[in-house]
View 1 (cartoon, one colour):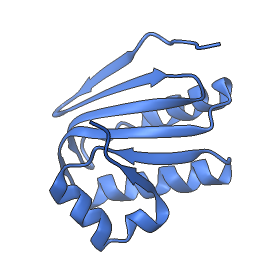
View 2: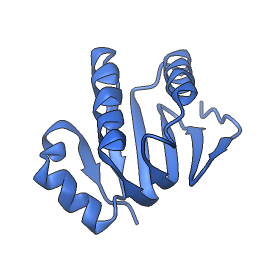
View 3: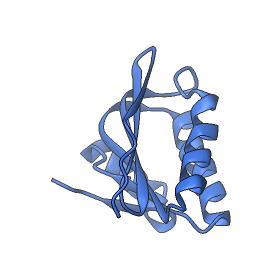
Length: 119
């Protein structure tokens, strides 16, 4: 049975986040800049709460509309991945811009995450 949670949208300066549930996982859509100023810690709790309540098997982080990501944003993704892996939830980085995809390759994020392009 497909459940749908009405999108939860939160706007921070230069960052928009949307959390949408699908059949067996969640998609976190990010738009704008992902940095120390824009990563709201409240969303981490909400993501975990929603993931575990839904019994989700994966979290897709959709990066299609991400304009910039700094070291704090990269660290956020790594911490998120560690927490989810500890709870047997896969994290998928989806649709990074070509420059961000190259950065993921250089930093070997593609060894830690599933990175995929969806058109």
